[in-house]
Length: 244
Ligand SMILES: Nc1ccn([C@@H]2O[C@H](COP(=O)(O)OP(=O)(O)OP(=O)(O)O)[C@@H](O)[C@H]2O)c(=O)n1
Ligand SMILES: C[C@](O)(CO)[C@H](O)COP(=O)(O)O
Image (tube, rainbow, N blue to C red; front, side, top):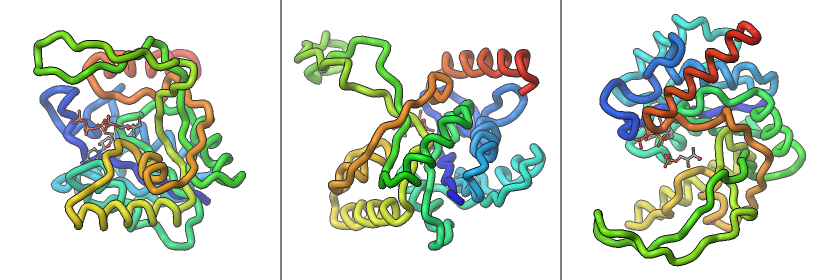
């Protein structure tokens, strides 16, 4: 059985004022509840550890309970000041005997179970780190940083065919994920720290091999207000079509 860590301790600054993002409502339930349900739908996942806002552990426990999330082992720990720290704290609550660990953003509430299963299958098949990803819809340009408000000079246009937009859940051999988080913590203690925004980035930083499997457009991250509008529409369509 795989276990999953759900980092849910972010503020959601880009979503605007209000409750911490993971506790904001989508179709009558917090984003976090949708994300945990999405993982719990997978028969490959036996344990879910939520890294909650540090002041909100009791509230998160109550919310999970009141939304009937039973049948799986679900634990809640206090998250940290960064996503990386929240994942590390969640990982510490996963038993050593677990071989496969997923890390899934609470902010990606609508990931289809097929994506969860595909990530687990790729780790089971031998990959040490797996990310779901989708091709880019827009042309991308690299720009030279300039003071705010000034037009940014374009440096170049990377070939879009070789770029992917990365989603979660990301899947890992547990030992690999534990090791890279421990190395990053040690680097931090020495005053440095790898600049990464996802867990696969840590594996890459320490020389590991990450592979990509197909993600899904509905696994998008709720980051800005428009994402919440889109998420409501996707959820309403699912509910209308199959009583989701
Ligand atoms: N200290 C933190 C920061 C982020 N996260 C989690 O990491 C996921 C992805 O992060 P992001 O979308 O960037 O969330 P926020 O940090 O909350 O967003 P923002 O940067 O807009 O404040 C979210 O589920 C968020 O709750 C976390 O567990 N602990
Ligand atoms: C982990 C992630 O969701 C993969 O796309 C992303 O890297 C989180 O990044 P953010 O900078 O916290 O939005």
